[in-house]
Image 1: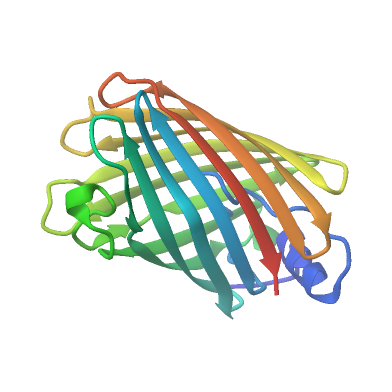
Image 2 (image 1 turned 30 degrees about the vertical axis):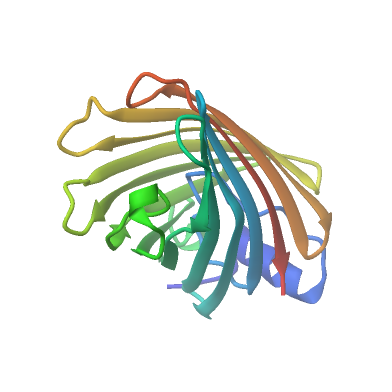
Length: 250
């Protein structure tokens, strides 16, 4: 499955030995990276969604990822959620915990199209209190496929997938497209369109336009900020989302 080293493999290996490497693709966006990580990473994120008088924040959102095999990445995310709705009391509590596995199914170094692709399995454990909106209340499964292609300083990616919440009529379809560009060795900018919709009611669709910047202050760390606004929301209410993150290679 893993042939000669691609640019992404060099990125991971360089981080281990302390050599400068190009920023890796897609992390922090809906369209994630198309290659499993080759290094252990700790992630600290903060997320905020605003819709009229309702604010939902994940702070902190902690994650850890490690390579179980060269073609397989395992990870876990946990979060504390804060819900501020002017029509109700403010709520804070643990959100659902997500277990993740990403497997490389196509290597750019070994195919004529130069495309990397990975299949993911994400299992959400119902830790959060569903009655107060902190979680789903049932286990959920996500099955996205992510792919990307590098062309000079540009990189193009996409995502197709679905989500199913156990014992609830909440099957979702998810799709996205992402373009990023490297600016020197430390900065990468990106723009993304991502949408999700109910499988049985596609009129209930949310489409977001997201823009982001990633910066590498050191050889083992990255900082990113992403901001987005809804092009279409499920109930017609404008939605704004913000994400700030710090990631450290161990």
